[in-house]
Image: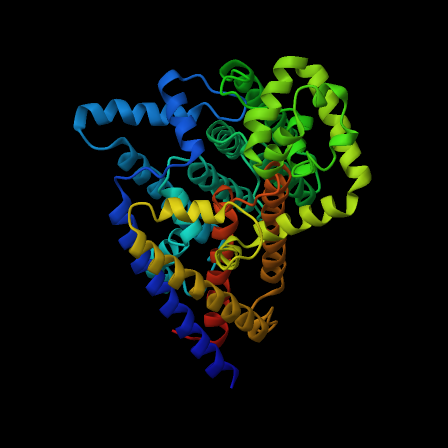
Length: 463
């Protein structure tokens, strides 16, 4: 009976995967020459001409854009088309590498799985919130792909009979540095993945690996040094990227006008109640209006003191609201495809409507069909995968003890990557969830579905 149920669920999943892949490829073909109008995209294009980046931006991504513009003038192919193809190719290679080194490690069905990998990889790439990032002038595509390669590389050195070599440390350091120079957020995200992965390797081998520890320290200094040399803080007119500046949107917005009586005179003299109401309505105004103005008037040090007092006061008076808002936003980042589906039905507040509007700019009908069918299918895939997991969860008869241990630690490590990414963007993106910043979470969910399929097929010897 269980085998019959597994077969039906397996067929259902493959049908939805096939439909999504066909629609996704069609959408790519129709949008290769278009640039979605995101605010970040406009800033990146400006920085690519001046090569002057602020503290919110890695230097490497504008440099890549600049390079493609130079090539475009010579071969008359749109720079955005070349950039999208690069992002798609690197994403394909990263997902394929992750599947080979992590999900299908020592699989009994490798001869069969090898032929299916292109379909599995394309499935992960054509999830709507992921594909939109690959097809936009945004740094999150390349950075997330490098993160997945880094995670797979770290998992690869966890084999109990494997001793990490110098080239492993160099590759890890390069992946961390490159991801951080493409998107500054990944200095933290890739860094946490590298540090925790390295610590587990040392615990597994029961000795301190000084080469690995030295690599981590040197990489941190290299990233910090590159940022201090290549970045020009404040050059794009944003609030300073201090802890207080970053947390201001998260902790105080949208309470700027409601808490007006508690603000210092330095705030009240600069902003009227009407202006504070406007800031409370649009979170971007904290970054592009309130913050830069206060930084300019008070100076960075005094502005930070004001931000710190505003954060403390808001937390002390409205703790419950702040904590519930953070939990709600954190939950929204956990599974972006499901969240996107719910938010398009009107649930919660986010940038999903705006992002979806940019996705529809050039192919409205195709986008509507693609997104609606794919996200509805995702709900179906999610339910089918849960059922398959319940049917074949950790069966003792088909995996040796060491493989069960490996599956558990891989699941915990990938879950940690998801939660660290979630935590970072929950704390730095204010009260408006933005799925385009977390493609890596959506991809890990897709890889989880593929892993469940592989486990079930091995157990019940399905085709």
